[in-house]
Length: 362
Image (cartoon, rainbow, N blue to C red; front, side, top):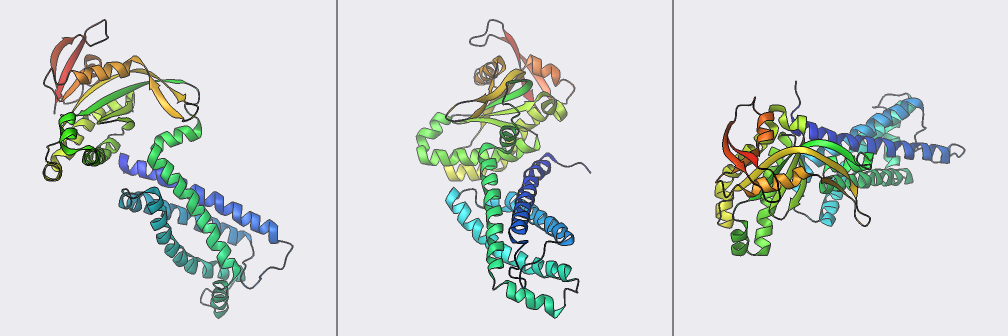
């Protein structure tokens, strides 16, 4: 069964939670083992780190991490999207704290029965479990889980703000040295944005932009696009050439966003008094990608293709077209079932040679 791009993206974001919890769990287990191996400790509540217990603890803590990641990505991220970072951490901590108590109540008796080699329904296991919840060991366990949670929530916040792929690129150092790639770009611009902004005022217009960009998220993910930049009311989406051409993802993205806005047309009209539309230009070519900045790091794309794509998008009004693509991109997409209509060879501002542009209809 083929995994959808959205499911694949969520899976790629969830797996690091499991790894974070597993690695932090190992650090705590081994540190505690080294610190207490020559001490008698609280033998009634502490469980000896035998191989079966270590294996069980590793599996259990990884499952907990994956569960936290799934809950975070699938539900809590959307639920708390409009909260401040402080609010997100506070409310999520309360939710996870209750969840941890339940998890500990389930897992401690299992670990105790494994260590003692007796059935989980044994009275010794449950007597020991009761003592555990009144011990310093229990508080230590809560601290360990809370620290693992804090690290994973920091990862989630960074991933959400930078974008998962950008975060991974920074972490792996993929673009620490400049790299040349062939990419497709779509410059997408809101129609009549100046009129809308003047009518709504700064605050309501900003809220509209937030909802406008949120509506684009699912189509961009489903079409395997990457958000390169938000520039006021303009968004720049990028694809590696092979991903953008596969199933005409780059063009599909435009029309899927269009459908999303149509579905929410009545809501946006009632809420803001405007029917929100957009226009876009597309082109592809080589870009150099690398990390720049001393006070603030960013991954930046440079190349003539960016300037050309922006110029193509600027022709949408003059040519009365919602979507314009370059002849070069049209040729690469020719095997797909979209209708391309030539708008002639256009002289773009700042360009020596004219470029043939095509409007696209589904």
